[in-house]
Amino acid sequence: RTVYVNGQYLPETEAKVSIFDRGFLMADAVYEVTSVLDGKLIDFEGHAVRLKRSLDELDMAAPCSKEELLEIHRKLVELNGIEEGLIYLQVTRGSDGDRNFVFPSDDIRPTIVLFTQNKPGLADSPAARKGAKVISIEDIRWGRRDIKTVQLLYPSMGKMMAKNAGADDAWMIEDGYVTEGTSNNAYFVKSGKIVTRPLSTDILHGITRKAVLRMAAEAQMEVEERLFTIDEAKEADEAFTTSASAFVMPVVEIDGVQLGDGTPGPIAKRLREIYLDESLKAAI
Ligand code: PMP
Image (cartoon, rainbow, N blue to C red; front, side, top):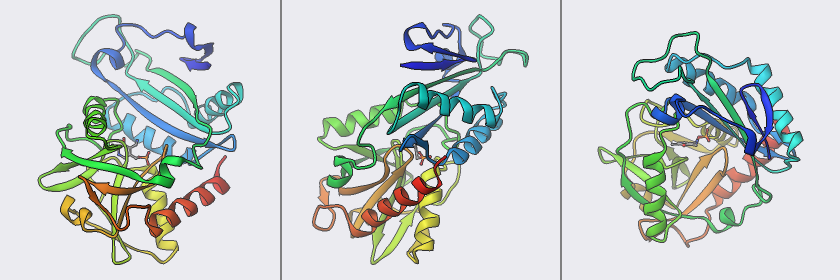
């Protein structure tokens, strides 16, 4: 693979970041994951806007302009011959060559790294045809989940808990209400109405969430943004998650309780189709 690090395109084995980098020492870093379908970027604009917001919220300097970012994404897709896959982007506060809790001075350059992941079959995914099984776990993450930081230890542990329980993913619960999945936003459907948690600092403001809610409204589907419990979701007709890397993923089981007939629900399937279709048309 050819990867990008601080202005250079290099073979992955030659790319280097300092051991003092604050991304490594303090998880002082933000990231984005953009999908590639038909060799084109899905919702690049959405990711660029959210990246800027994450950087601003953390008082971190932007490593480059949006135009340069687009150019780097496109060049990596081309150099690595990606038709279907993902582009991972990470920006860290960089390093002043030592370990300190206080931020380094403003003249320290942020670190920027991008790499591609080739994923043939990303859109026509067997996992989406089958649907996902989720378990529920306590949400013990920090209070600024709207900032897309690389503090992914607990989400990673959540996925392991799911795996060890024979499931695919975990939905997290705080104060009795579902926040989101370990790496996606969570929804259920009851009597034709789509329910999902409203935006706040408690959840990530999903790029896919925004697009899917818009498309659902355009397709005259009923959407309600409100807090919901895991028990409501277990009693739902269907459920699903959204994320930039898995699009709309049907959920067919929650804590061992089967939803509907245990296969992906009609609304989740339809939204997945609409999302893939429209996103591909708008891809750049
Ligand atoms: N919530 C969390 C915690 C996530 O990690 C992600 C994926 N990055 C999402 C939601 C979905 O966001 P997006 O649609 O922008 O990928």
